[in-house]
Length: 195
Image (cartoon, rainbow, N blue to C red):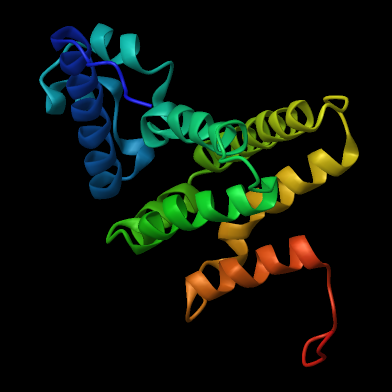
């Protein structure tokens, strides 16, 4: 399926939004989250504070500027998977395609320290994680034709969203992701035992 061409206005809005987010992250990493104001970010991005708020609802959202797109892609991994591909396999592919590049990003460790050391950002990340889990669970339930609050769908969504945390810091992150998804699709067996 081809994407419709993006107009000039949309490209400019996206470029402005990205410039604001990039300036914010740079300043947060340099000075610390609490020592950067919206005015500082607006000045660094060469926009007004009103423009910052047109693109972002609050300061925390500047750190997680791509999260809405990530949630959309997560749900699309379920809804737009190829015929015959299982939900777990589609989500495995999605995690491998999207999380591994994030994990390899040179600023990933700095970003994680920023979030972990800032209570507002940690709380925001937790709320965002819950929202993503709910959206994914609803998409899985809809796909399977079961109630939105189906426990199995909710559990699968939460487990999938924990995969990056479980795989982070492992010697071979790809193998770690594969191991967790194998566990999700085949069930658990004690380490060292074959089935």
